[in-house]
Length: 204
Image 1 (cartoon, helix red, strand yellow):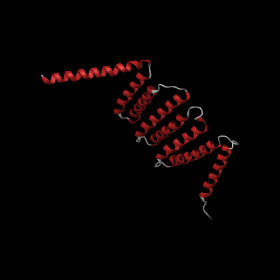
Image 2 (cartoon, one colour):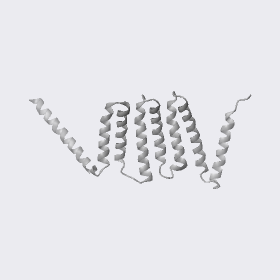
Image 3 (cartoon, one colour):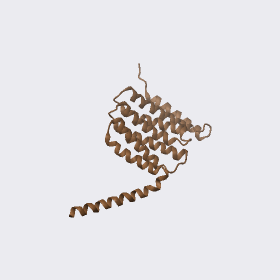
Image 4 (cartoon, helix red, strand yellow):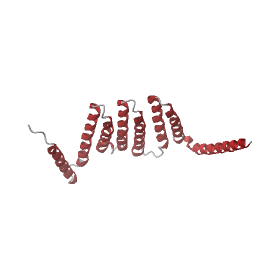
């Protein structure tokens, strides 16, 4: 019995793609090209996710799997609604979170997962809702990410950057943003006075 030649399948897919692109260019079937490439991306996502869920050693497959799924979803529908960036960046973030959920020792995956989800939310805010000032959202998202690292991975050092990021997010994302300039002035003045006092005491 002869083995199936995958060149036939690949050739058929290429022919189908060519036909759909021709229909799109001639105006017979608008959006056919986008639909074709979205289908290719969805198939690739399904293959990677199958590898991820079928074998524990292939944890890395979650990242390209969810990324391709996000790109496919974005190109089909979400991009028109202004949620394309959230779909792509969020897909990457979900991929890293899946790596952590597969193996809780991979706490490092929480950081890129949280960062990408935060950037996805910011992208949706700017594209869909035309929000310009998103600096506070960025720092709050990063603060929550490091807070989760400390809570889920029991790493106490992460609470320090979490507190700093959350404080910056509150200052940038509230009506008190104008006070942020005075905070830096106060920090410089206090640091300068402490250095001068330290130098005078050392001379005694």
